[in-house]
Image (cartoon, rainbow, N blue to C red; front, side, top):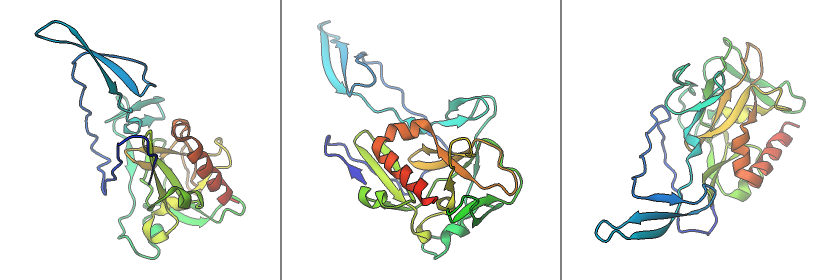
Length: 249
């Protein structure tokens, strides 16, 4: 994990996350007025002393918004938290449970109906194919699993993702080792965003894939990434994405 030594804040990683039961955020207490734009790290709170009636000013650091608390409805073209008001809760297709440390663990975690075979992309090696019923738009896979590594190791792997923890702290996960990763390591990047049928995005501290086009029987799963995810991570993500695409040959 890479943290720039800018503030005294630290990042912690939870071993398990309940992706099905979103936690409602606490509303801020109405203690005064917050002045300053959302892009500024510092705001000004103005309060009134109850005894003297005088105004008091205090500079405070604004909290970063938790953008990865939201899911996206492909039909409504809008974001939601607990469930879409029109289409209900999001569909999650979970991995086959397999203990860590098994040599071919990644392949064994494939959900029912998916298979690993030779990719349709020239020189890309293996890929993931749908051998079951059509996967509907809006289905979710994930999270990606792998080893937590430092930035340097992540940049030298075609199986890495960067996860934003705060403005000064990122985490890197590498799915290179099959015994510590899942089947998502085999999903290839689309040659362009028009060929994609999966969207990679960050959700609750993990990387998930969302189905953005129906994936019919025999089709290969090909992913691109959500614009906001790539934009927020800047150069680190750009380098990792180029590495992923070069792994396709």
